[in-house]
Length: 242
Ligand code: PXP
Image (cartoon, rainbow, N blue to C red; front, side, top):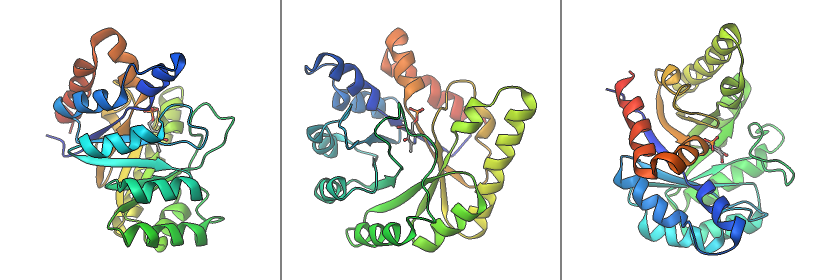
């Protein structure tokens, strides 16, 4: 039985809603269904361009999420101000480019070190956990620990995009190596991006792994099977594979 927890990223329920600009489908309703079917928490990304999740969503989610409420955000004063009002259980700092389709790669912790340290203290003062979305690289793991962050979230995108057995194994080893460094220096480990019903099982034994943030694959499957089934199936994969 795995102790890894699933946090469902419901951004893409909002993507579909924004396609018509109305009220449905509602990511808040989606979050309730995810938690009822085994999700340990809910993740959303309030992007500066508001392409999916809107400000009213992040406040409504605070009222309904019973497990961990994780708010992803860029190093942006505007979003920080909103996050301090919302008071999620955790924030995850991510890089953000306006033109990207989705988050591409981890934070540059070295270049942004001072700013990251300031943001960590700001949220710690409000008892909010801070996670840094980073590449599985030794320097980024060590700098994350130095910044005072509670968690790293290892970017699994390169592993998920790798083609062929050798390339996949190589990326898996990079993730496991970064996770074992994190464990040695006592910073907690989450992971996510690009994970689905096939590539999740092999990384569940990553050293110290606590939470996975998974969105697109679950919301995609839910169109055909319903959200309750899509979440339950992934929870089952996590629970059966360790
Ligand atoms: N973790 C982070 C930091 C992300 O930015 C995203 C995408 O918003 C995810 C996890 C989830 O990725 P996916 O939608 O590919 O499962």
